[in-house]
Image (cartoon, rainbow, N blue to C red; front, top):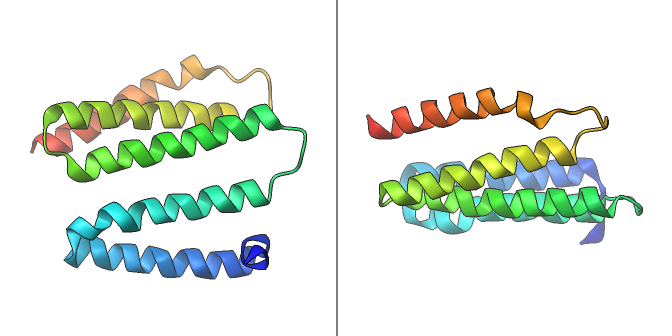
Length: 132
């Protein structure tokens, strides 16, 4: 099992297969999406944790929290039974994007505040699409 997550090729094949299953479920069996979509993120989480080098515990924690935030936000968007769920989901996804930016940054000069207009634009587009 560990070899599956150590090899980029094997993991890519596994991830692609799960992605195809998720796409089929999205088109035909929508309510099973609560299982298929998180499985994609959990695969990424396992892959990330197994392939991490020691010594960057802060960045690892930030990426793990970002992935978990993404799962929560995505599940809220899948359900989207109320506008409140959509807003809370959007907040989780915005936090996710900010944490990704921090976690994957290689420079200390990264200014998160430069990303705020982009995040607001994305939220605006997402809400406009949902309201149509």
